[in-house]
Image (cartoon, rainbow, N blue to C red; front, side):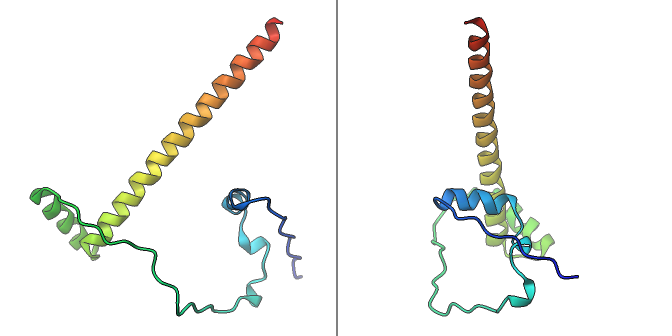
Length: 114
């Protein structure tokens, strides 16, 4: 039996859409049989070259670790940077949620006193 695809809601903005897709699987909304391979020949990569100074021993260790994983050391550096950025964002998100919960609890407490 073939399952019916769900209807994608209308979004007010990109943030709302981003939040939706972060919590829903596209596989529930699209039939994989309808997928077609896409080609974007004029799309330029959205990367920027930078120069960064690292201590020699840190660079040597990075190269050793990358060699063990059989990937270029620059790729491993990007992976590590990406992970740390995600962790920082996560901790910021958690801190924001904690603050929101404290404000909400304080508001509830004040409501109870009036």
